[in-house]
Image (tube, rainbow, N blue to C red; front, top):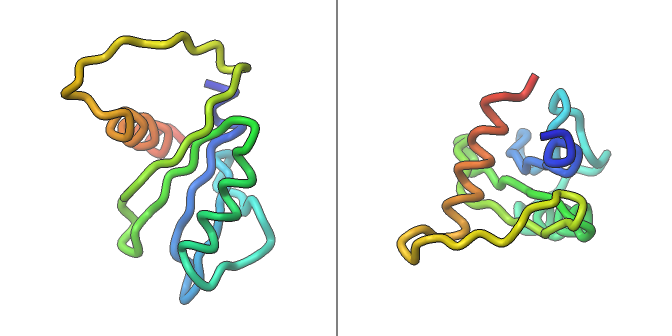
Length: 103
């Protein structure tokens, strides 16, 4: 799980702005506040360009979306899944579990 946590970020509402937090102890990943969630998402995409996951929270704190960029370092092999299971849903479940297990 270490490699996932290293490259796992969360976008959350902070007052009137949006922030990007790193997974470890919810430290602020960037010193910048973003006026819009869209701006925060663009900045987060840069953070994961070499692999990572970003969970995007709505203003009420619930995960509304997840974006990801694969990393060869994760050693994840391609999995065959049912057509009924959407990739985004799998990443939402993963993000939910990471959020619950943060230390």
